[in-house]
Image (tube, rainbow, N blue to C red; front, side, top):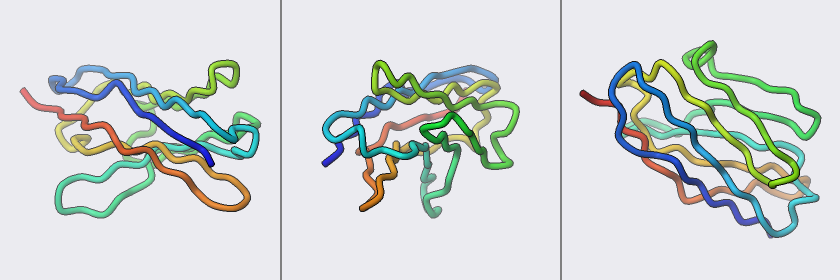
Length: 115
């Protein structure tokens, strides 16, 4: 089992920044990749960014150049640095961990971008 706990969400004005954290515990040695997904009201959950154990990253087109995903293996934590936030970034952000057997999900953290 892998447990994921997100933190760092909140209310921010357009153009502002937030950093989300995802702390992993349990069978962390089985994690091959971690990612961030988001779900806005009335919309489907969508991929935001992923990072593999080897450090390769991938981003949704809508966040390229504004968001940066990273992982600190020593702290078993993944981060999502979000800059130049827009109202359309408002969503619940979920942390995801990929293992050979299954994916794991956190409970989510709400990000609201509004003036």
